[in-house]
Length: 540
View 1 (tube, one colour):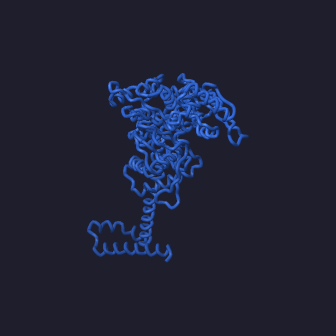
View 2 (view 1 turned 180 degrees about the horizontal axis):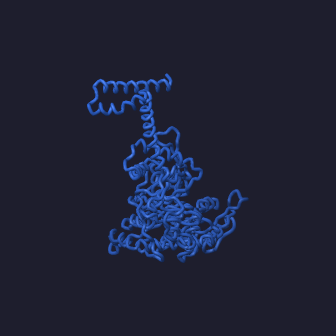
View 3 (view 1 turned 60 degrees about the vertical axis):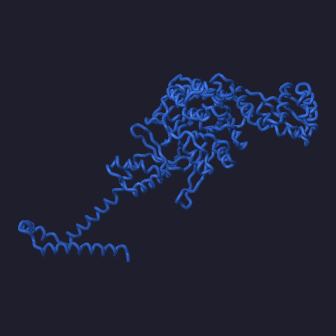
């Protein structure tokens, strides 16, 4: 049966029902008052055919039905027009708008339902059905994905066109913009910040605050680690470059967890400050999606899968997964983020992760010098605005100095090293000193692997004493023996007896020698690799 014939039968049935109602009214008879009214209106009824009257009633019902059906879509359209819809660089649909002079940007996902429910109540004084909300989300996703101009979205930190942005998340749309000319607090900057329920607010920074005073709350074991950490923190908000992980190690009572919390509170305060790493990539992916600076507390080891994920997260990467309840639709995540990890000893990790990390040791605090955690955090809160203002001053100077920094000997994560050198120089520490601290930091870790192998340390002492070497491995073996006999007689037996044995050991030490500024090269023409050159790496 066709749609038209069905429609005709329906209209015919409705017409018959109306006739039945009219007949019942006629059979019951009108009241005296209604008789008089009917008598007065009788000529009008007689001039208006009953069939036409019924047709007009049916048409009116049809139009009312159309109005009711179209009204929800008009409401959805009214809500949609309040947003600017777009997709980010990884095809996630987004919506942004300004409410009470505060720019708010959202991912159009399931959690966006709460925002739309509030919109419907505000605009129409009544809640919307869940089905209408789902329709609105589908339409908004569609139009967002149709926008040909994708945008980047950020959480807390952003680097955009030479400037670093820091979202204060104060409910007023306040964002700090720092560039080579200075820093200022803006409202609604030209970039999109996503805010999560876990994020807390930062104070309005104070001009000419003290970044150095922040470190009076911390307790580093070595001066080189303090210098390196002071240069590291200004690099964290620079989302343009890979930034290494920060491992805080120390004995019980060295305030590892407190130090990690303080560093995070300085630039990224959140409700859930410390986390524990998950065993699968999907859950780790969620952590790095939601946290600009994750902190993993009291972790003694990371397994191979965790190390691979963390290396990817530091240098830049993400995941591609199928969306739930879909056949083939995928969603993408991407991030380039550092993290902080605390442990008693240097955690067991893959070498690739060590190469992307800074490992600093904290000093155990004497009982008479120990402060209550509440007292430390109270002092931090009272001076937070000053600490943050001082940090921003360092960032401004680093952005100004960075173009003039040229690294001849580039270490791993060279972009970070360059920014750290610029931050160091802004605080009166030379680039060469920053690089020495950076390389020494790695050497301290690697040397722990060779603590029973004194040959490496003897070789470094020999090279430092003679200023370099060029010759055969046999010649090196002879000179090394002479040096040890004169200066370290108890270690004579450590020196290999044959040149080929020394050659094999030297190849194991290549990276460690680089970290202490010695470049080792074997002759390309010598297959036995017995011609060797050691040259000091100059740190500019």
